[in-house]
Length: 284
Ligand code: SAM
Image (spheres, rainbow, N blue to C red):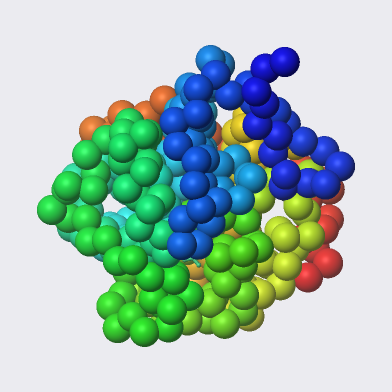
């Protein structure tokens, strides 16, 4: 019988991966971490039994979490990443030539070290970029104490339990807002709408008092099972969600950023949400 990894995100619904080779498995200071190779998805990382990223489909998630806010913002220069230990978000942010600095507040040094070693294509040298400033800290602590301000904040955390729970609270969102420049954009991974709709609604409820424009955009990431992955979007400048594909294309082409999933048309379309999600969001 093949050695299987069974995800434990849901008690009654799961995905399995054949573990063709286990590359690393251990308890870090904060989480249980496994990295294994699967013939279909390449190298796979899971934290506390939940799939975080795979070599084969990571580009979808990382490109949509980064290029939607960075092309929507007229002139982003400073970015804050919360979490993101595998380095995929950092890699995509640093593709933008006009970005002057990226600060990353990641709670678990071991995730950075092990992903750099076993998933090198995720960070692809980004941790050595002089524009990257890595801080090992709980993201909730970091934003509480941070005096700096950023144009875009990207919260690439685990799901809202364990160490990730602190990154979905009202206090966190309020402290995070103090780190955003005027006209800034905050985005965050907010789970699979079909399976975690209550998390999407709860995020809107907690973000709405803080921002003029709170919405969600989506992408379907195969290994985040159950359908579209929703990304929280929050800004005080409502016009930033109204960029046309034509204006985004000018920025996209001028940047020279190469992608495999993101394009201006998908950017615009990603803000269109299914009716059941819209109706749930209308309740808050
Ligand atoms: N793409 C994945 C997803 O959507 O679930 C997230 C991937 S990334 C590996 C998640 C990162 O969040 C991990 O590196 C984890 O260590 C980090 N993390 C969890 N809780 C955190 C916290 N409170 N502060 C900072 N980083 C945190």
